[in-house]
Length: 226
Image (tube, rainbow, N blue to C red; front, side, top):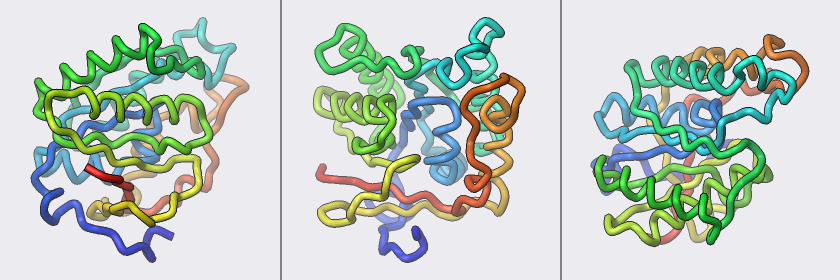
């Protein structure tokens, strides 16, 4: 579907000069939703970092005692190295998986302040985050957090949404952004780093559909307003 969308290139003005922070609700969302964005911005020295909202412990509840959280962090680091070609600065916010905080909660407000400090320190211009309409509660919470950061940051920020599990939003009233294509097979190679989510090493639990190995080589993001 993405190949039929009319979208502005991230290599065109004003997007080509922006530094990006990616907010991923869980380890693996960075590859599924922004693999091509990470690939492009890392090579153009415009990737400010990745922030993981949750600890990912909800995917295989019976495996938490076997250090699933640490496993997922290692997998994410490997996936990022495969996408970026180098080690990427990451921030693990360690919210409990599937138990999101909401605006006004102390955890939400504290996390918002942490991300504002990060955006100022790393000169972030734009945040890529899962779409607000995404069906998973953590994905929607990540979007609310990104907009709260944008609205309270002393540094001007743009927010662009990406889709992992939800329907693509209507392009009406939005600027669609298109990354450069990543090398064939690179997203699949990065996704394979998330072995806990693609195999049976953690026992019964969530498993990524095999169809995701055939994802497009580009990412489409959706920007609304300033």
